[in-house]
Amino acid sequence: MNRETETETETVEKLVHIAVQFHTFFTEINPGTGASAIMINYRGFGAVKIDRHGKAKVLSAEEIQRMFTLGLTTERDRTLIGVMLYTGCRVNEAVTLKIKDVYNSKGRIRAELIIRKGNTKGKLATRSIPILSELRNFLATYKPTNSRDGFLFPGRWGRGHLHSEYASLIFRQACERADIEGASTHSCRRTALTFMSNAQIPLRVIQEISGHRSLEQLQNYLEVEPSQVRGAIAALSMLSPPSMSSNNQDMRNADNTKLSTE
Image (cartoon, rainbow, N blue to C red; front, side, top):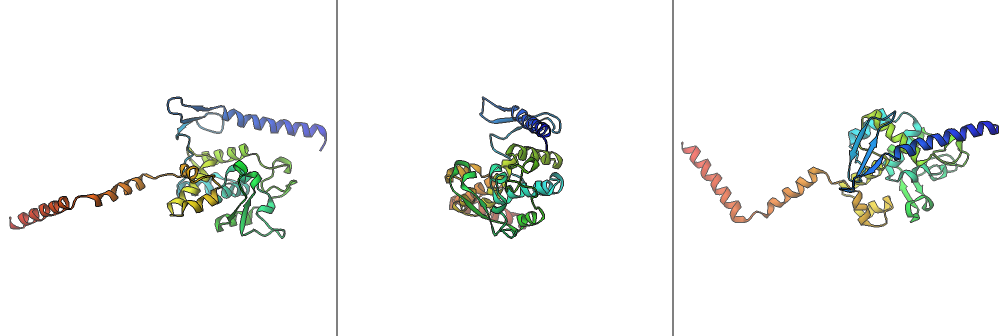
């Protein structure tokens, strides 16, 4: 590749980066509530305004199905989003994975995926996360090629790694195709952690997977469903005074006796 071709390539990469930055420009902060109001209004996306108080949407099982069947169109993209969903990792942790973090020297998929300390938020600690069978299927199909620097998701011309903003663009385009509103790449992480919490996995175990500094930070990620709130309130029925319960039962018995004698 000559210098002129390289210059043209670099120009295209810069234009893509500017386009992503242009989207970020549309992020506004509502001064009244402090909530994020995201405006998406350029070619490829509809005009959508979403107010989720700074929290990414938790995807439903049906939306996840649509995402992988209708939204994501390449093996690389399905594997990338699969890594984020089935490990609960951050987008930057996913795009900076090395091939050796996932496959051994013989090209076989490891039992555990390694997220290295240097690529984590705050550089707290290296995490090893078991590879679920669903993710293993994606990794078995996807084989990165032409990765000059050994990254699982190489960038343009195999140099470096896929940029986290470009990964976000891939996700947003997939959401558009799958008719999913209000989601971002952070939805994968929040969905994974919420599903684990709803499955009664102890928070300390989830923290080990998520890499949060504290349990308080982790709890802010977890979604509380309306059905859970209703169930919690319903549990208060056991607090009814015995006299009230017995009086209600006596009234029902009296009504039944009256009906039977008429």
